[in-house]
Length: 227
Image (cartoon, rainbow, N blue to C red; front, side, top):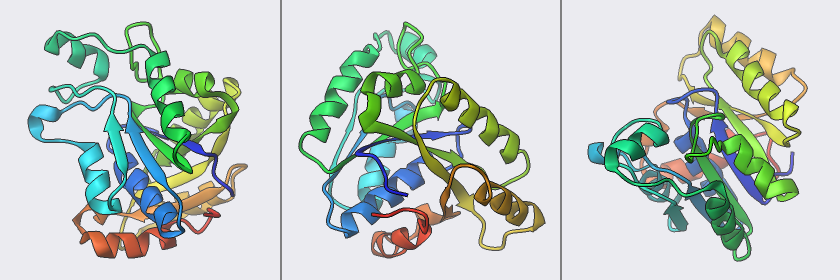
């Protein structure tokens, strides 16, 4: 599978491994000589010291990385913005910035907040809607859990993308355990035999690796990607 130039990284839920997948993809692409930028439309949870952008840079190495807006509370963007008393930018502002980054980089990775249909602005705009605005240059990578329930959650996310006519490059399993059990192995086999490719699996605990080790392992996590 060849990735599109603009890769929107979404998840079947929060906490499934989107940030680690984004960092690993960035590291793998950079190791193959590509110029990569990372953009997160809305970063929440700043008051807990949670910065997905900083984590991506720490693990993947020096690259252009930006957040469109940083909010304090670890919540969905709309209620977090209400508490902070700020207005969320409309999707077109994010789209313009992403296209600007794409003009100077081989790839732009866009990490969503939570799942696909979490609202990113005050008009109901979501990451799915942002994909529609960006058009044919963009495609989605769906990050899913390896654990029980993931087949249904993944199918629902893929169906939502398909109904909107959005391109999906494939699925990545986040938080892949060091010792997978029957459920995890079965889910990996089931997702690997689906219509869309299983692009790979990012190890659970990847965030604890030293950056040099993370970058060395990144390419091996994506056996289904031509970079």
